[in-house]
Amino acid sequence: MSTEREDAAMEDPQVDAPEPDDAGAASEAKKQSRPGRSRKLVPALVLVTVAVAAAAVTWLLTTIFEHKQESAASFTEVVELTDTSYDPAVWGQNFPIQYEQYLKTIEDTDGDFIPATPTADDPREYHTLSRIESETRAQRMWRGYAFAVDYTEPRGHEWALADQRYTERTGERFNQPGTCLNCHASMPEVYDELGDGDREAGFHAMNAMSYDEAYEHASSSIACIDCHDPQTMELTITRPAFIDGIRKAKAAEGVEDYDVNRDATNQEMRTYVCAQCHVEYYFAGDSKTLTFPWDNGLTVYDAMDYYDEVGWTDFTHEESGAELLKAQHPDFETWSQGIHAANGVTCADCHMAYSRVGANKVSNHQIMSPMASDETINASCLTCHHSTADEMRERVDGIQTRWQESLNVSFTALDALITDIAAADADGSASAEELATARDYQRKAQFVIDYSFSENGRGFHAPAYSISILNQSTDWARSGQLALRGVEVENGIGPAIPEQHMPDSGN
Ligand code: HEC
Ligand code: HEC
Ligand code: HEC
Ligand code: HEC
Ligand code: HEC
Image (cartoon, rainbow, N blue to C red):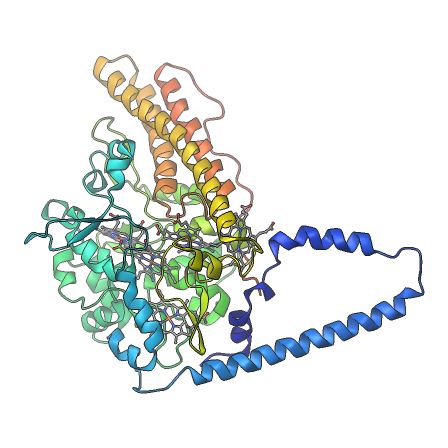
């Protein structure tokens, strides 16, 4: 079912990443014990080193062996899974623990469910908190677009299909394409049906449909077959948009012909399966093809340059008349700019941490915030950080508070720019050229703020990067205000971006 190397990674994530909180202490200890005065110690040291290394190898092999036994024991094949085993309940017969955890993604783990009165149009008994009510500047930022009408906190995967079906954003007046469904339902079945077994063809056929029509073909929310190969249980990429997007991102780094299902390591797959959906996207052309804007790389500026190059606009702002972009959940792209990515720490390490269930060690399939409880923090963070749950909570809180403070500054600046453009447009106090410059600054500032606001780690996935891009957006918004007053700002252009690299896999 899996290789030895994978099992080693499963057993002990520290093997792949340095132990951060101990690293300083360890090098300090090394410095103090450095002999310096005596060469006689050297042969003894060599012997000790060899002995320690041998013991470590023995330990590792034993661990791998034990783990192999363990995973072999945990799997009883009750049913044979095939390419058409779409129903997660069938997979559940072979893997009851993972199935049970998976079903629990319906639970409220963030404490943000609010009771609702079911109606014929919206039968849901619980919604999550509205993000445009709690941040009215976001509502204003999106005026003229569907997100100004309905935008809520995310919740677990079991909700993905229903929340999309019943949001006002898929209501009649917004006329959405079938493309929406790509990340909110189990796709292999839909693609097979619409493409007569050719999944790529099915993908294109679905994108070209109306949302309502496509929805009729979906039978479940995100399922086992969306992330796993049914025969080998290995992680697999089922979404054409990611296969295409990551190939372009790799090409931008000089890696030609990247085929993710052929070339990615298991460690990388532990991030890539999530990056099929937790990314910024748009619907390209009349075919409404789901596309990720990664031709230039994975930063927010790379995405913005891409949209400028292809001349893309999502909507025209109702008050200011600026032609704007909308950003959606760039969780993967933001993670890729952070310190965990640089150390090979994957989405699954934090959001699907291993835990022991009876005699088995399983990846928690109740995918949620790692900060949900002491238990999840222990399983997710303390495998690498030698700390306490409270201290980890404080660190995350600290990062998210600073991010929120920066976001506030940026939002205030953008809000002021919108007010100024609308006023200058109404009273004729700015020239057509000044107005155009100011609107262009709005486009830039809004995309970056939107990007960071829509990213679900609230600054955690890449703390320094998130604050740095917000800084840039504040400057752009204030430069727009100055432009309306005839002042040209020299630093109102994007910073020189150092060459970007995809994170190392950590192996
Ligand atoms: C590339 C994958 C992808 C596509 C395509 C996609 N979504 Fe989502 N959607 C997500 C992810 C990931 C989340 C959870 C993270 C979040 O809420 O930011 C989400 C969350 C949501 C939510 C719940 C939170 C909210 O935004 O109110 C709704 C509703 C939703 N999407 C509607 C839509 C609609 C309508 C479309 C088509 C216009 C669409 N989605 C297309 C990936 C996608
Ligand atoms: C097929 C698309 C898809 C894939 C693959 C996917 N997600 Fe999601 N994810 C979503 C959508 C859509 C939502 C929002 C559902 C809603 O709010 O109704 C979501 C919600 C979440 C949430 C919020 C849960 C909560 O309780 O608030 C987390 C965390 C998450 N996903 C992490 C992951 C991780 C980690 C992976 C990879 C192991 C992953 N997702 C793979 C589409 C996807
Ligand atoms: C080092 C650990 C770590 C890694 C790696 C990581 N995350 Fe997170 N993630 C977090 C933390 C911490 C939060 C903030 C949770 C909170 O505020 O409750 C978070 C929040 C989220 C949320 C919102 C959850 C919620 O309940 O609102 C989503 C969705 C998400 N991450 C997806 C991803 C994806 C996709 C990846 C990989 C590309 C990833 N994360 C990588 C730690 C991590
Ligand atoms: C959003 C993606 C996703 C979905 C959906 C998903 N899994 Fe997984 N699954 C993972 C990841 C990531 C791993 C870790 C694999 C690794 O590191 O090799 C995993 C591991 C496993 C394993 C290996 C043992 C373990 O727990 O680590 C089994 C068995 C498994 N999943 C069964 C299922 C079943 C059954 C379902 C449906 C009920 C399911 N998975 C749905 C992502 C997913
Ligand atoms: C697989 C190992 C691993 C896991 C799991 C992990 N981390 Fe880390 N973390 C690291 C490494 C490695 C670093 C970088 C240390 C360095 O280079 O100084 C790091 C750095 C950090 C930092 C400093 C961030 C910065 O930008 O300077 C914070 C905060 C942090 N981790 C919190 C968490 C939290 C919270 C969790 C659980 C949700 C978590 N980590 C899970 C390995 C891990």
